[in-house]
Length: 261
Image 1 (tube, helix red, strand yellow):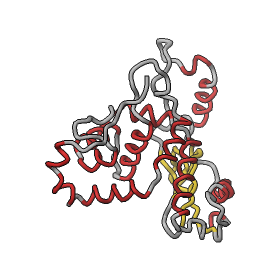
Image 2 (cartoon, one colour; image 1 turned 120 degrees about the vertical axis):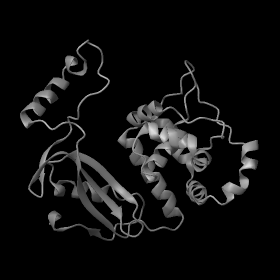
Image 3 (tube, helix red, strand yellow; image 1 turned 90 degrees about the vertical axis):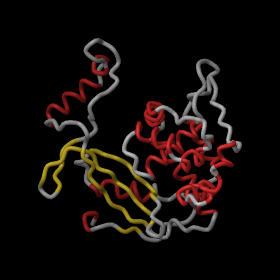
Image 4 (cartoon, one colour; image 1 turned 90 degrees about the horizontal axis):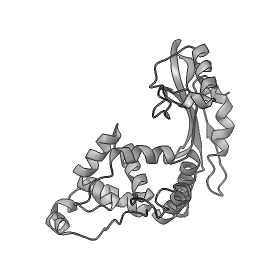
């Protein structure tokens, strides 16, 4: 196994579509974004956390940087599923050019996106976020002048269950049998056991809570983490503050609502 060879050289189709691409505002925007980031350092971080493709055995894998760029497109363009992401990449000129795929290269299969996402740890994403923010700081952007911290509730996709049942399933998951299906095979899917109950405007909600901080000048996400919904916002005020510092600049101001008082 190695990595698939992606040839970014212009093809006959590039010359045929040149006039159209010159007037493609989405393509222009993506090219500007691509040119503003030093991808070599991002690729180095990915290679340290994503080992698929490093073995000489088996079929060639997609480069992790290409798959990471695919997930960026999914986030930026609010694409709600991996099959739809695959379809959009195959359909859109701007996506193919941003990824460095020729028009004759098909998108990675949607299952590849899912596996890549599961293998990419939060630690890897934190390192990538810090690396990009440090790049921006070197280009003259001040990202520590002030940050805003808040939390939001995220409803779980799993069917709500009682706290007693939830604790029972969590204990079962810690046993060898808890990760096997009825036939004794490893489970391909399992319900969400990280969520729990809280109230939002007196209405019960079963889910998670995202604690995040953003730069008040540019809107960059500086720190984020997920907890069960019942965790108090103030618990993660120190986390969001300390993990928001990605450069040698000091943090001038921290803004939060009265719930953090």
